[in-house]
Picture 1 (tube, helix red, strand yellow):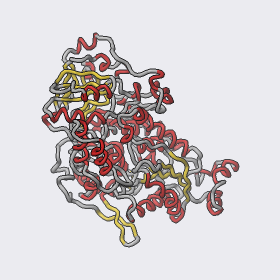
Picture 2 (picture 1 turned 180 degrees about the horizontal axis):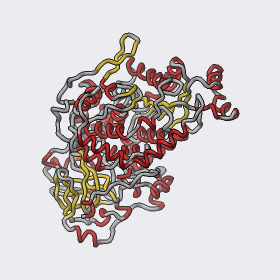
Picture 3 (picture 1 turned 60 degrees about the vertical axis):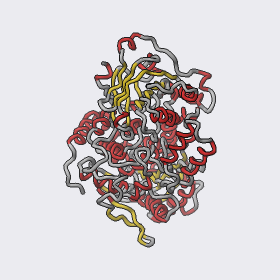
Picture 4 (picture 1 turned 120 degrees about the vertical axis):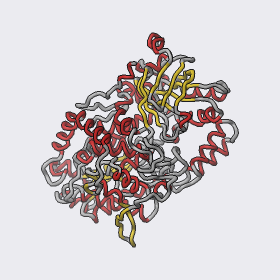
Length: 624
């Protein structure tokens, strides 16, 4: 257990979150505790017809157990599909989990599936406009799976982008259920991510053929498992572990290995143990509290994780009755050291990070530095120091042993007293253009402040056309890509712009991007003011920017300014988001209700109301 005093800023941010969330958190916990029930099993109160429907397809022995009230029944909710490498390994999980649950004294049923789309496939395509919305669809799907009142706990199978946040948001609606997340692990290392990025940029310049590009991409994304760069998918995995929702050390073990299989069996056994019948009741709604959320923020910042979590963590917190703001993240970032260099913030991939000491060492050094709350509940037991351990197979026996107390590769992972950077590289930007976030951990210091004329685009395709035609050559610019917010078109990632922007920067041009859309967790070296709110489609300031407006993106001081703010305020909006039939195709027409009801980016860009929570704090500088 850490004996080091909590850092004063971490303590202060936690205290103000607790205070701000008092009413919402109390209301949430009251709902959780009311749903717990009084019987020995969740299915105790089901009528005979209800219960018979619930076990009609089960084997005779399982029916006997489900008719009784002594053994816990676990819901398996899976994101399996065999198109996506990260989720393909889940094909074999349900029977393994079921057998392990039985051996542990319980039972498990596949309660339902959730959709799992891939941002890597939909980048730059119309399908990307469904990506962020899919998080809330996944939350709803999780709720449907858990709604049958047959279950005493849950096993959630998910890895990537919106899938894990969606599963967690859905599970928090059933906060009385103990819940274990079951990872699949990353694919083995393939073509280095830096080489892949180099070929992408050459292709953007017309110096590499499509065949050469495809060969590089296929050598990078080459087998079962999660992609190996440190984007949103692997940020998800690290956060679930630091939040105590994975078994210690389980996030980055490769698929198809004996250790991976042992950890999958152990996840089911642990889920049985933390039910009421198992003797260690650990409801997920009680586990995910303000300290757990702060730990997730710290881990994200210390590891240089995905900017998508400035949306997801806010939405996850709100689902638990907790009011987290971007300013909380920014204030934590000012004191949390950057301890990891994983692509795109370095050359290593997550396999190298894991080999260098991984999450066990990261938790160890952050606890010693007073950056993490030790006094938290986890699925492994009480205290985050349990996550300084690593799983080890001794013959057929799975045990946990203390992890390394020193990094095994200082180019990839460092202790808190010798960081890559003194801060986490995430800032809130404010000014007359609105509020945004910027991630500077992969941006060189000389590129972190850009002042240049705006070039305005209402569609990313128009920007790419301008680049291909040479209209962006030889000029400094701030690319304003607007009408890309949650209410406009679902807030797609604009990662496809990254190679072109990188080409311009490498030519010596000063370039930045300002957008109410998202950039991928894999984006890096070009300064990007993203998630700008209020968004253009709702009349935000970006809707009034015109070509030639001189904009400053300052990732050092946290400013997002325009030279003539008075002129900007006086103008009418120009441009617009697509409407009506312009959304037809790729299923986008089905999401009109989402576009009409989605909340702002700084509230998590969610369609779900946040009961009893205050609206996000807006820094005074926004109104300057």
